[in-house]
Amino acid sequence: MSKIFHPLSGGTVYGTLLNHREALAALGDQVNVAPYKAPPKAPILYIKPRNTWATSGDVVFVPSDAQELQMGATLGLVIGHTACQVSLENALDFVSGYVVMNDISVPHASFYRPSMRFKCRDGFCPMGAYVPRDAVADPDALAVTVAMDGEVVQHTNTGGRIRSVAQLLVDVTDFMTLNPGDILSIGVSAHAPLAHAGQHVTITIEGVGQLDTVLAAEAWV
Image (tube, helix red, strand yellow):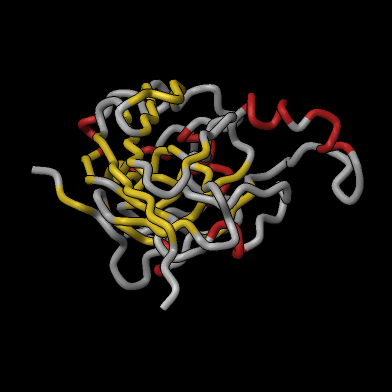
């Protein structure tokens, strides 16, 4: 039976930036100008801290300084064993299971160094039910849909990544250790839809599950 999964104390949730080929291509020549002057050569990670964690059905408040929020449908890899410098052949052995994630952001244009102000507001990382690794035959070939108020607004999938699930684990654990309970997202696809207060957002990932998020206007007392 599936269960709602949140990392235990010590677990960390990592987001991955610009891992979708189409999303990187959409930046065009921006990746070649200063200060970077080239596309990223290693995974770009950021942290979704504890205050961002939410569960399916929770209300997420749209901040008063943002009219809309970006709904970042993505797959989360739940780490089951300490992973350090893993090989491509056994990388998936370190994954215990998967979760549906909504990596919510305030729309922004700072691609390489996303501000915590844009990505780390309260409730900005809803996570759905945990499913074991064996329940998913190929994590790189799962259909992903985003619906708002019952109408599908985005069809994407977990493929088309610069780094596959296994390669992402190889490249990340080459420079840092992932611990049991950590969650690493594979990154958001291009053209993540925008939603506003009053909308009900449903993210579905084939074989993993469904995640519901209700948006409401931030209330000031």
